[in-house]
Image (tube, rainbow, N blue to C red):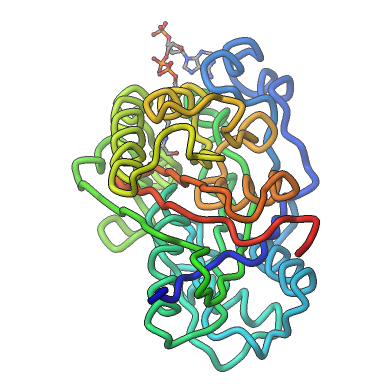
Length: 334
Ligand code: UT7
């Protein structure tokens, strides 16, 4: 008997128009294009400008495009899950706002916070509702406006992040396509190495927290780098072994885009050549929960029905995770 799986049947992305180049960053902090490219692979990133626009704006644009492209009406959607670390508000959640903006009403919608692993977490969770038969069509969004929490006087972090959103449609599939397996993990040892200290319930905003610049991302890059390389590679190797996949069986590695060197290490460990690795860090930087759906959006035209994809992510928490997806359609015969 073939079990019902959650297949990705459409993907759409949104990035803001404004391009923040390495050259512009050189004018803001003591950095240079050569350092940024050689240490991270990033050439430029997108920044959302405009009063009153948060992550929901980008998420809603991605969802609107997805509904249109897949000929799906808002009434057909059973659930919307948004992975974000930069919600518009502490509450209500960004998923509620996105639903409102695109005319999706009377369904469950909520956010998932797993930092850069958010999309893999959200995909894992959403697929359960399809596997149990409870829901037929679910939208999973990854949306982050990292520029809202980036300190543009800190050269160690401001070169890394960008804004963007991506969304996928999940539908029930009983022909063997979809999310076939996933692993999600976390370890709270990550707190001191990657965090936004103030603004939550432990350290609510005060003049002092603002003066001390505690509403921005703090990252101990080297520590995070070490964990990221190990955990992303370990867990990708684990899911391959568990599912009897060799490097040759993997059509695409879809890695979180935090640092090109972390991506290369993961691909190397999996025995997957860089020609089979989705890479768009050079143009978008690290968009947190949006990196993986933005990669799928960028590479969609090259994907074929039956391709084995391994998604892999690592982020604050620490959180990490991987997903084995059998791609459900070829772009030319959707
Ligand atoms: O997505 C969530 C998870 N996040 C990640 O996975 C990110 C993990 N970490 C990284 O990707 C890397 O650690 C960074 C890209 C953040 C930094 O690269 P690195 O190779 O670890 O550099 P470093 O922190 O060891 O710094 C090397 C040198 C230092 O100078 P000294 O002490 O050797 O004189 C830094 O001060 O580079 C200096 N530096 C810079 N120089 C020019 C740090 N930032 C910059 C900069 N431009 N922007």
